[in-house]
Structures are given as C-alpha cells and as structure tokens.
Image 1: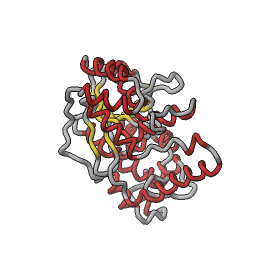
Image 2 (image 1 turned 90 degrees about the horizontal axis):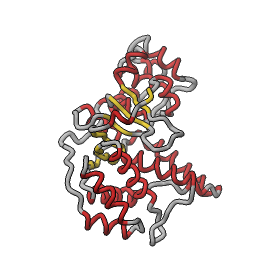
Image 3 (image 1 turned 120 degrees about the vertical axis):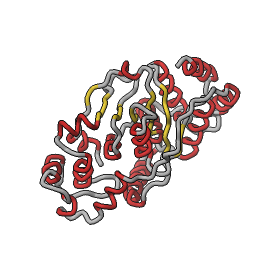
Image 4 (image 1 turned 60 degrees about the vertical axis):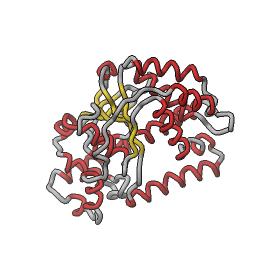
Length: 296
C-alpha cells in the first residue's frame, strides 16, 4: 500500500533519537539497505569495489551502524525470506519499473537495485561485527513486528509504515543524519486510539485501499475506507474484494521465526578487515565502529 495513504490513517509523531539510548531496535534489512543505497545514488555515482561492483550497501551499513552506536543503540537485523504468492504482482511491477528505467537511460532508477549478493555481504559484515541477524521465513516486516511484540526489541526500524499492519507496537522511520527528514515514530496503540480503529479495522481499511497483496477498490481512499470499516465487519467483501480473508491471514498469521533470540557476540577483527579490504573500503572505518560497538 502507498505510504502516503497509510499516513493519512495513522499519522506518525516526531521522534527524539535521544530516547534510543540503551535500547535495541529490529531493523528491516532489505528495506533499509535499499533506502540508503538509493539515497547515495540520488546525490552521486555509487562507490565501487576493485571488481567494479558497487559497495554502497556496505558503506551505507557501516554508516548506519556507526549512527546507532553514537545514539547508544543496539540493532538486530531482519532479512526477507520467501515472499507470499499474493505479492507476485507487486514484485513484477517493481521489476518492470527497473527495466523501463534501463531502457530509457535512467541510470539512477535502474541502478539502485540491491541483489542477493549485496545482502549476503551485509550478513557477512554483521557476523564480523558480532551483531545478530535473522533470515525471516516470510516478510521481514512480520519478523520485526514479532521481535518487538516479544520484547526482544523496543521498536522496529523501516521506511515502510505497512509494518503497522503486522502489529508492530512501535515503528521508527527516518533515522538518519539528514536534516531533510524528521525522525518519526508510529506508536500503534496511540494512533489507533486517535483514529478510533482496532487493528482488525486498520487491516480491512488497508485492504480496501490496496496492499502489497491486493489491488484494492477503485476510488477507495483513506476517508472512504475508514468510514466503510466503521460500518461493521466485512467491509472488503461488501466492496468486492474476493480474497480479503487470505490477505488478512498474511497480516495476522504471517510465518515468523519464534525461536530466534538475538545474541550479541564479539567482533572478529580479522574477518572484518578481510571483507572491507576485498570490497575496497578503508579498514580503519571498521576498526572505529568496533570500538564504538564495544562501548555499548
């Protein structure tokens, strides 16, 4: 679902990053890696390793981890697993946008794709730093929400407010050094209370507007969707959404790894240095981050 539509239903509040001191956050890895690679591509040509491949994903991850350490915050990283069949249309649309950008010569839009090799190197960096990560059996959003619900993290970190549909009690957005974007928090209980909605009604409103798993109803914006769900259960079905129950199950019973417990280990300086050197990144950057992480 478009983030603009969801913001109108669940308006976030400004967030003071000083509140992160001593807390642990669960980070949607795929979402965040893509966001900071995109941010780099918007201002300059992406940095490259000796083999010609971009190393922006690793530089961005180092920068983000350094920022979290500066704030006194520990992080658990969550990677996407198998995507639901209902998301196929969304994934195809994204791939088509990239191909269209390549065909038109739009190198920025075409060049910001993050592939599995990039994500695997991010995992390798996290391991070398002794930081925990988990490969979710399904969507990373759902796993992040579970980690917060289970008390393993204080909040989820993502650029996508759709995480509220998975029931994340708290979600944070715009945790960067950029002054162009204000850090935001979405406290689910607070915003649902203000909107006069239950989580069940929120999910139904999202289904009416359209999610990653369904197209939604033509002409159904935030105001009409909220009005519809407040008339009683079954609003999506009344408006012709045939697979509403299937979509609901993805938000309320999404596969997550409930056995995972974040464990913070000791950095492996040798492995870290080897990785950074192979990707053309100054080893001293890693050494400085190790010192910062050890102080947490």
